[in-house]
Length: 221
Image (cartoon, rainbow, N blue to C red; front, side):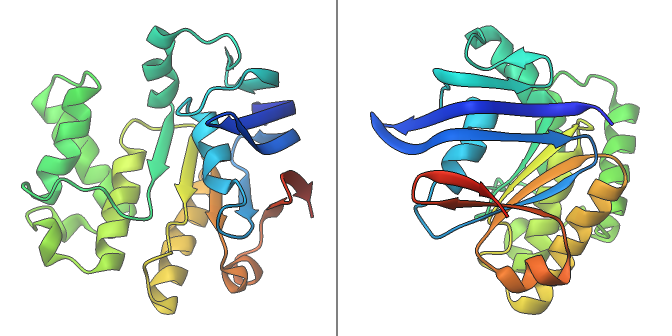
């Protein structure tokens, strides 16, 4: 398995305030990793640093073959194409149906052939059990169904890494279990997953490696 994320002594700042310091961790292809900690402990900031929403200026940070301390602005879209992001609040486009939401991403990332676009959309919807919902508008879907569409969207460009930021935060317990199950299946198929959560029952039910953000530190539990 290849090493796809490698942080050494990284410091993460938000508006010049230290959020996390002396962070060191690795993640390999196909690994499932939980990021736990209280609200405001730095989980989201750490995830945002991985896809360059927050810059890394102190320490050593490598994602795939990119050095995050030296990455040029024009290289960031190429890095992000290898990362799928699952948000807590879905961020689906409300004025178009599921198929159009997914096609929008493929159009934006350079896909041209209609047959290939249709095939890829069908593949990812099938992967999350939503193949029969492609014509639905977001408001016609339950929270759990919307989140499965978000996971399908994250899978479109066959990323090596999925970042899921509190993906079950707005969902009931049974639906949360289904979402984490899907993420574990994705990991089992070779895509690394980092999932932030404060729901420890999910961590116990679906085991994975655990990192904890606490007191501006990253603790390997």
